[in-house]
Image (cartoon, rainbow, N blue to C red):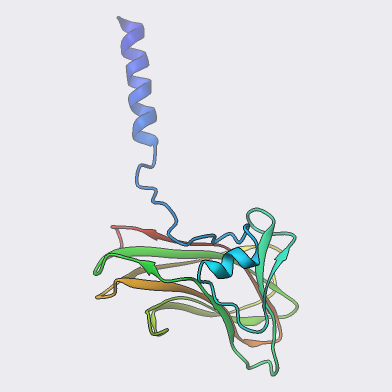
Length: 173
């Protein structure tokens, strides 16, 4: 009986320690592993200067590089297809980014169907030899469809993005 109680206690401790709130990533192919044709078929937009590359990715083998196009002040970004969301609900968007070359202004956000930001992390980053994470908790307000925006606004550096996610999170108020 004592062995049974100890085993039951250990089982309860293991179950309590699990994170049951983990939600699936709503961004289709946010790790960019399926190839560029597949990614664009999913609704991702790739302007001039945005390319998929293989190499030292955060996850898997592929990431997106957003290069300087024209003047260093020229903005360039990729956007995901529109994701169906529940209005007036909490979500978290996140990505991994790394700079190549010199520093650059990074923008990571969530946009509505017209392309206007409803939430945004806009920051100047220096070159680091490792992947960093940008996390953006937000509420959907009245919106039922949103997209994820990842780009560079200005600076000489190129920005690499990988592991883009968008998950439901009821704790966001």
